[in-house]
Image (tube, chains in turn blue, orange):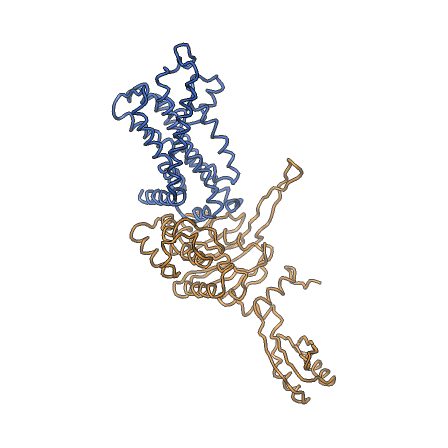
Length: 271
Length: 332
């Protein structure tokens, strides 16, 4: 456990020094997501959001602000880890990935340490913005003070497991960069970030099931929009837990296979 | 002791066949290699490009899985228990990669140390010792991107020693370094073996470096062992022998005839080169002929202007081997 914490802390320090070396980066971490959120919010405004609106079947128009806020909060958490995994190519380029595999360090420790480190650095600013914005938007309804910390905990744990999975995928090949494109817009559209999953056609709902973000947003909205208590969110939490367990087991297996593949082909040196 | 037996590595690559089709192709990087390194010993691994040196080093360091063969390091089977082996080996490659350039030397070492489970006070102390050893104490908190090539290479050495490995694999460690820095690194490598008892495998294109440092040398060609011996023995067996150059004011035909006749039993090569102010005689033989050549020249009353004896180097032996195929026939 001490070793795992040691790796985690080292990854946090490394990530901070490598990726967050300028105050401009922090500025962009706030400005870009905030602009995206505001732009999404105002893109709804020209439309009829009254009682006749098709969207009104899924949530009332006064809750658009908080619906989008939770959606974008979740999206930024998950998206920052797609970017983090994509930067694995930097480790290939610099040759440091070989040195990680040369050492006896726990592979999952590095994979999740890297995900956790990049997540914390990448989202805290927008997270602060979202919490402040939550005080201004209408429609927030929580069962208790614990709902928000619980929502954030669910978000952090899910995102780290998702990030670990992506890191493993990027270990397989230098050509995994296509995931960057595949996971950007589809995750934004189908996970229910801007449009409720329930409002999508059948095939859209099927695609939504692929993204863990879908399950996380479901819980987050149950907690902060619908004001559900802990017992009432248990079914959704159970589904998420099952998805995350599957993802965790799959990551562990894939990490072993990725290392074996690298040992067989020597592809870690390719960049 | 590190012992590798019948090591073989075959890569399966894809070869393009038109726009969409590919064909699998097997490339044998290492055919069958036996290798041994004792603690405290520096062993050279030489070969021409594509001989399989880097593949061999990566197999020994567990980064590559051999297609066949076995590797046992201090009694641990590297193929069955790679994680145990990773704790006692490390690898250092030449060049400027394999470091985080935005991080300082101290931060790099701290990160790589944590990968080996070293933490807290022990890690801090280890980093201080290593920075002192590679003379980077003053630049310890400067980002690596501001380092010179030599400084980066010294940091690589420190990084490779972070886990205090029993066996160290050095792949072209002085590549592209200035002569004084390379010399300093060579001294450091020798100290690691002699004073700290580390078993070291060294590959280098600088053959004088291998000759100066290594007690034994493995020469491989196209993944196959061609020769294994001490550098001295390899030079003796493979190179053409000492090159004696004698400059004389003139060389009468009779003297040349006598000299040719005298050298016949010694399997020596004799070359006569006309120079502006006299004649240069070049005699090369594995046997000692200097005294006999000089005696003959004195007997014939030839006036000597200058005399040089050049000892053959490992490089001469490698160049000669490179001109043969693996079964040892001279190429046309």
